Length: 287
Length: 181
Image 1 (cartoon, rainbow over the protein chains, first blue to last red):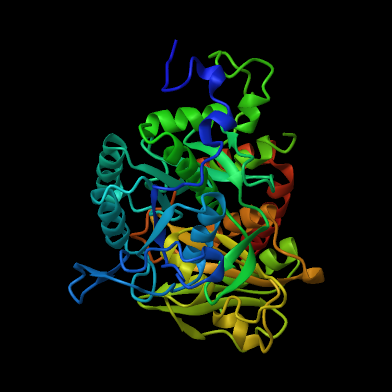
Image 2 (image 1 turned 60 degrees about the vertical axis):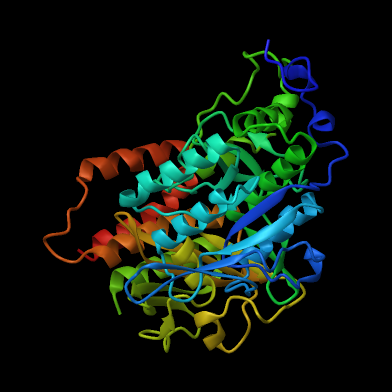
């Protein structure tokens, strides 16, 4: 029987046990993206402006890291931060800006930003982007392994076509695609990896750079939902390692909890139809 | 204007109900319009944007497709070529165009009919069309290794089985491309 702190069996892994009463306080979340509009009213001052970084490349293509406050080059990072803050209002959010002018498709910039967040031991790292460059696959594999073994939970957006995207393919991260839910706490387990979780990401009202809001659709909005829930769980159960966090997320997923058999049984009935990547959404149209 | 890319842009409009759309090729630190369809897009061919600008800039940087719509008529949405149409976009859908492992451009659509938002199905379908645009953008000569036809046939057969609607839409594009020889 698997034992987790404060629980007797997998059946005890309820949402109430996992995150009930948690606000995310004490948890540090890194958003590796286009930057964050820290002054956005939706974020309520929870962005550590001074602690963030901007990753750029010099004339020789070498990585340059600049610390301190910065803006959002596009708006997406603010959207991700807003989703995480909405779910875990007391979690501290730090921006790792790896997208923007001059950084088009630069995998080394992504890697440097992710590596920086791992080195600083962030509890949760949201990475709503990736690279298809196979020559960078090993480098991302190694940094994600490092994150996994040191206790940093990396959440990535799945690719919505059958094309490799790193690091979302790796077992060391939680890869997320969209479900059809509008409830931010209603997420699903996908039994056909590498996408392991499905979370709200369709027609989501999100914060946007400049102080406003837009409606967004995409797997890149689903990932921060899981990041936010993970922050809540980690705040309440700080001892949990990434593999335990994944177990908790699996056990508290809507389709697992609503399965005919209890979550504690390894033969729990899950989706029988085969799915792939972001297209997993179709398998859950009846959930 | 590249007829294949124009056909892809047109197919994307017809499939989603978008008002206008264009294919942007990534050329160094610029994005250049190389195919367009829809009202008012005739003047856009050849227009260049900074590669990091607006929605297509985000998409080519992140490799992630995205669909956004303003809430309450916010005019700051999208940027880029959409702004050149003279009115703020009511909805934007943009997907990356891949060739082999690299992002080589973006396919962007604006203004879904009825002032609606682009759906997740639109995102998935246009992503498929973006793949065709990527193949067209990436074809550079005899040194480019093309996948064997049998591989495409197998994938098309799987798509026809798993998603007949998407396959039907894609077949229209393929027929148009084949008709052009």
